Length: 94
Image (cartoon, helix red, strand yellow):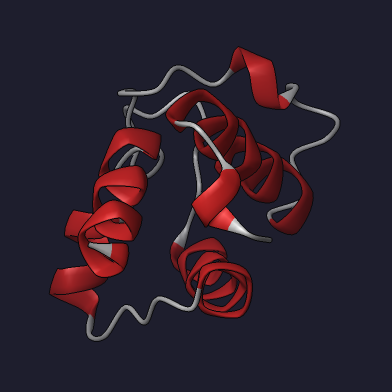
């Protein structure tokens, strides 16, 4: 994916699509149903991603956007919402 040609809305939709496809959530909701600032992980999360989903998401973000997320504390912070993922991507391309 060439993020240099994407606006923020396109980038958010691309991330939401990756979440739904890579974390096998197609039966639960569509990418458009994910709210930008809602929690992706934890018991209070509607999305209800788990640690295996975090690993899968980290791998696909590295492959698609050339960003690396190291360690569990850092990954929790950067993967907590779509907005957090976008902020990480934007900080790496700046």
